[in-house]
Structure formats: structure tokens, C-alpha cells
Image (cartoon, rainbow, N blue to C red; front, top):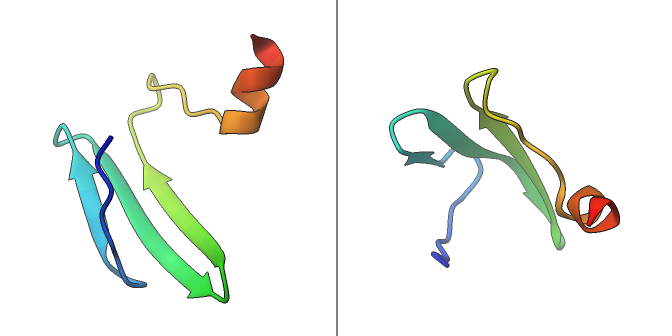
Length: 52
């Protein structure tokens, strides 16, 4: 697992196709924007656990 620190407005790129950007960070709350191809499924962790 890669752990990185990012500030609002900064982002990381995964495999030249997925961009994960920090859009807001306040008192322990973090908002992320994820830009990925439509064929790439994105699911929240708690929903994935429910499905398993």
C-alpha cells in the first residue's frame, strides 16, 4: 500500500488513466475527486464489504 500526503488541489495519477485529487480537507474530513475511465468500476470500501 502506498501512503502519500496531499494538500487540497494536489493529486496523484495511477497508471496514466486514473486521477485522484484532494478537493477539500477539514478537521479529519477529506473529500476526493476521482477521474477514471467509465469501464473502470469504482466502489466505496463499505459497499464492497457488504457485497462479500
